[in-house]
Amino acid sequence: MNARKWWRRAALAAAFLAVAVVLPGCGCGDDDDDDDDDTVDVDDDDDDTVSVDDDDDDTGDDDTTDDDTTDDDTGDDDLTAEEWVDEGRRLLIAGEPAGARLAFDEALALEPGYGEAHYGRTLAGGLHTWELISLVSTYLAGDNVAPPEGLTAEVDPNRELLRGIIQILEDQYFGPVAGTTRASNDWLADNDDAPFLIDGVPVFLGLEPAAYLGSEFDAAERVAATGVTNIFDGSGGILLSMHLDFSFTYLTNLGYYLDQGDSTIETISIIVELLDRLLNDPSYPNFLGIDPDYFERIDQSRTYLGLGMLQLQQALDLVRAETDDQSDDVIGYADLNENEQWDSGEPFTLPTYGQFSEADMALVAGLEAMAQGWGAAFLEGTELDPDPENYNEMALALANPVLEALGISGFIPEGNLFTIDVASFFTDIQEDSIRGFLETFVNLLQIFLPDPPDGVFD
Image 1 (cartoon, rainbow, N blue to C red):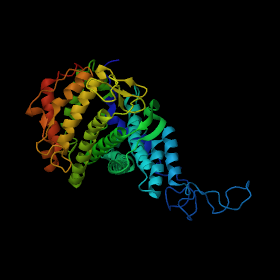
Image 2: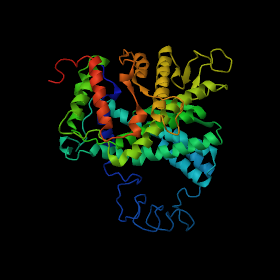
Image 3: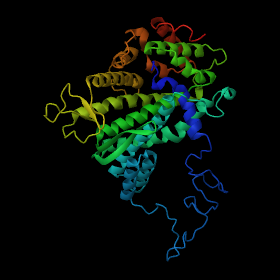
Image 4: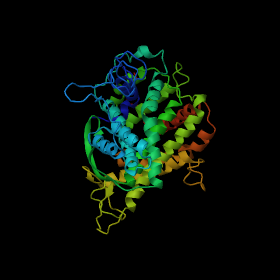
């Protein structure tokens, strides 16, 4: 196989996911096809207006096989907080983090200070976010991805369709998940942070479980799960702030263009050329322009994005600080010196995957340095600024070790030309700020990248 990567159909994936999962007849909380006659509540699947929690058409006994006349349609209203936590555990093990998160919500509604419920909700939130990402990856990895019915060039008159899709995902998924995950993470940091014990939690890659995690989820996993959620919530908020009007022919042709690259560098040069053509397409002069109504939202979203990056780095610090037995930790380290502490050079471990190789650790080190540097740049000047004594900018060259760990020559030069003043951008937001930056960035990249292969754009 050539240089094809999972991310090469990223733009197509967002549209496909929403059309396939969100748009067709979705009640977004309703578990049927809305084939009832009342409009009291989309979560109520019967035709009466007695209760939005009662999903049948009566208030009497629901069967004729018992000896009582009491209504059997009581649902889960009588569960205790402990029973809701048990239900959340069961759903996590069943690979249903979305339902688990709601179960932990119910437990916390009964006992707001229930530590296990807070921990379970944090874990469920991170896994729910990852579940959405894995669904996207099934589209990204597909060799024969075709536009869903109705998603063709004819949708171009509605040129903000993609933004509407992202709005649905943000409102129905990432936003609510991130809010409760952050709340529970903060509560646990200030109160009870005892390990949450559970076995056999599947982590999906695509539609199949890639690993089963357990049994001790502690502070490191809590912070990592919150970091992942914050990164995607922040990224979604930034995308929502921009005009995403462009021709879907760019998406439908994307797979073909990327197939023409025989190396990763060639593939990157094709992506840069496509972006350059899109930015200079006179039919879409507002592409990536920032909506003035979202100036405040984009500033909040950059805080979540920066915080999420630092939380991933913080999670690794928490792993290194552990002195207990690492054999049952989800994210742990191999105690090669057997001295019950992490020492420089000792690799991290994950269930199923096992001990990290030297190449794996090089990638982790690169990602950690990038997350720390870029996270500080995004948080510069905010209340969460981790280094208020120094002015932090986003050095693109921090990506070079990550590229090299992936087998790609680090091609981003050091220096001010490739350093982004993120704080200045967000404190003085203009409608064309992102567009202008990308135009400059693309022009700089084209200086150092080879031309796309001959014939690709003929």
